[in-house]
Image (cartoon, rainbow, N blue to C red; front, side):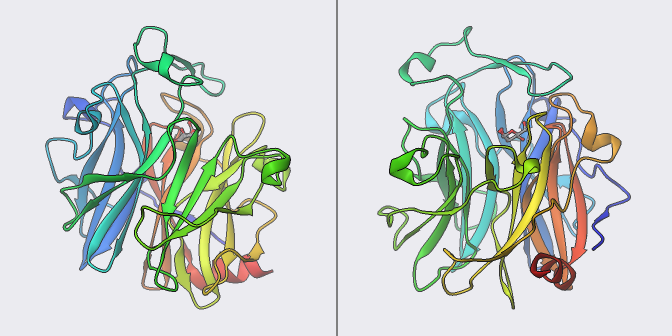
Length: 333
Ligand code: BMA
């Protein structure tokens, strides 16, 4: 199987205005009637490393330009001026746009180490003492009737636990919304797993949720101790195609893939044992914030090709493509 990197990678880089001049990464992308909308996570400084969501547009899925001079989702909208809004994953269901995001409620500083996860420091900032541990992430959903004007709708995890990588399925299944999440604290006998995993839950209204079920945990060395959903799944004839990320002991982020049953997405039909993407190119191995990260957060199907949009080193955004059938056959092998 061949995953092709776009020759123009990285396709989106930091730049003006100043709220995005340091980093842009981990984007949501949807294709709507010939227009690609990209929801970038971007930062204007490393200290604090406060990220918000900006919006870009494209007609070819490769060349994007800013669609708004202001970010469309910021901490201010949550009355949390220091908050970071992160990793937007966007779907449209029945004419409404749903954007799942991760929220870190207060400021922190980023001191890159060049060798792995940066030293993230919270001590200069107030508010973190309300939480059991610093850098904790709560996840939620914002909604809009158009691709631009999102408003916070609900939280999909409690503030006491560290829970990110939330992704909605792009359709209701048996009349219900379906959500993937990755709660770090759901480990131990009570949860039936020793590792944080990808969990799945359903809801008629995004308010009340079914008892979450454990969908998958790390099984291979490259996945390290935890995996998380990459992008919202896409429908194929053979099942829901889900990309996910794993992070090994050297903090290298790689990508795997699985197929879930179309009617019963709690059931994993097939899964790659080896990764399908890892950091190879310069822009995937070196960046301003963290080295060796490919972090897909969006997939779009166009002309039987899967367009994979991914963050590189928390610094820039790249695109890779693979035939949908080719990838599905590879997962089933
Ligand atoms: C994860 C998340 C991602 C980020 C990645 C690499 O834990 O914070 O948003 O891209 O780490 O730093």
